[in-house]
Image 1: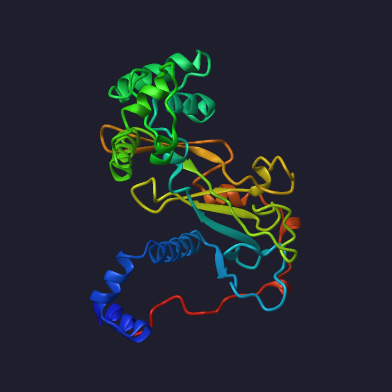
Image 2: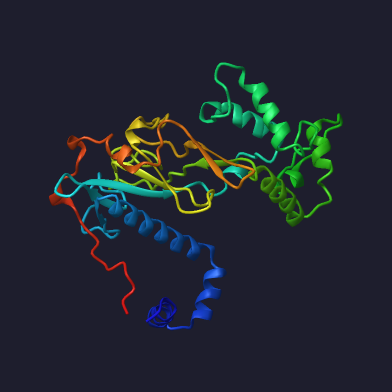
Length: 317
């Protein structure tokens, strides 16, 4: 039985409908696509670790009883016959460039300067700002200090023009007659231009707060899992995983036992030959064994506390 026949039977059995209806429903639901995307990431991650010689087991989502505070990841993993650890799987922040308003020249220039330690084409022994300005001139010539800033529709709509004209008031005045959709289109086109030369790799750790998970804020505690995996496919040409030990990441300013919500892991710089060059901060690696070597047996979980999800991940014929 070929894969398309398997898919047709799976959809008929699980959703009681046809492939065509299933496909249309998936296209019209970003939430459904997100769930499927997450499942694809987890399955590819599991396969990767197993190819590298690790034993991997899925952690139950619906925990029996109160969930163990150190088992809040997606997988248990270990080298055969050694200690078990917990791995959390996440993706990159999907709207990072838009969130930081990198479609505006000064925002982009300042962002690159702030994170200059993560950029390999910046020579540390020389002043960073002139290097960044020269790079912007060479790589993004249509975006300069003279390019009017763009603003979201809500800000344009509510803005009261001052008596004395400023660069901001002039830019907003030029957007006043455009609809929400037209302004969004301008922003997206500018973002596409910027992202043709630089893309941001940023985490997005958001978690619920309750007495059962022992969190003091809406981000994970550093001891909830042993390693973090970030799939960067939203900014890369394929599913690619970056790893870090949460104990090596900067703590939240409100609670040193918690992670921050966002970390700038690094950048992707598309090259003229089509290559996507990745620049990372020192806390992150694409080598899982390197990340694994940062762990010690004292951090391993107790095997008797494990709750394994034994559901079959494969579609049965």
